[in-house]
Length: 122
Image (cartoon, rainbow, N blue to C red):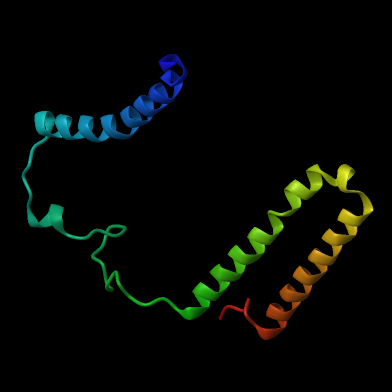
């Protein structure tokens, strides 16, 4: 009975080892080999060779989020094409025309957002 659970136990042990050993190993090595000598230069923010000129918590333009959401939306919709293409022989013409209707609605949404200027970036 217990031999049936051995692969699960082995999987959990390997997963735990892969997740914990690098963290513990780097901590142990940093204690053994590392030198803790902080100074103002080491603790200062560093961006491409010069001091940071703005706050890291600045607000982004709303258009960035709009384009990102639209990309995710249309990217997820296109992901439905892969399983459809695999079973196209089995679902026949009904499945084909159902997907064409789906893609038509998708294209109409894309044209609508294009006409509204959601994809324009100044």
